[in-house]
Length: 293
Image (cartoon, rainbow, N blue to C red; front, top):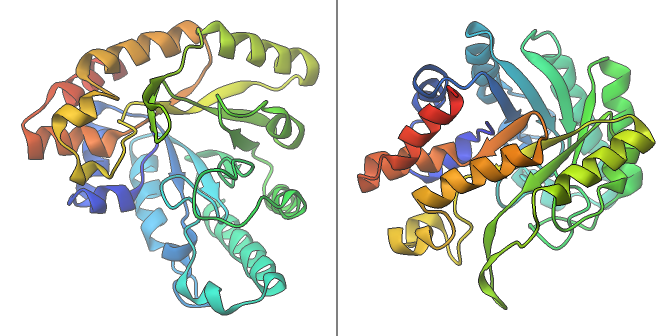
């Protein structure tokens, strides 16, 4: 499961309560978490990792594992989670500050036994989505080299499962992480279902394994609607055009048919919000069954 405190707060939740419910009620034991730059270095040169610390500590206490994402571009909109002071720097200063933050994050967190891998950036080559600068392959390579110099756990590089070839991730990372989306909204097509069969992912993952010896995992399986506007601005009927309870179960079956492992789901904050704010417990209850099956 991917978890983001900012998404919980956006939906009016207490992030710590939400995270504990995922651990203790849903039964999640494998997480993808992020050391967001804006939360970790609100003031230049002053690091405060308390937000990610409590997540890692709760996971460690339950024997759960963590893929820990570091970098400027990390899961959840606007993708690049910049501290406010970054706007006043020139590009060279930004790169230096970014590398310093990555170093500080890894050095601070590497002592946790819960962390099984590092994710460096998130879909760093998906330039068509998010409020971010253009992709910088050289900087990404520097970040990866830095992380590897500080810790020997594997590095995961992620790409869009549908909108990329995965070749950069396969070349740069120790493992490839992909997204898997089924129904999304675009201004041109409206709510559009991807027509790929599960084999679309299976064959590509097998090819990467054959050519590079590296595995492919699903780091973002769609279990939350992709909408025209924000979640809190949408009706339940509108959300169901992208993800209904029936589609939730279809997505789970589809992902299992693709055969990639592990698979990190996306949308737990929304499941709880639907249950508690909209009196729609079906997603939360389906997740309980899914994580115990």
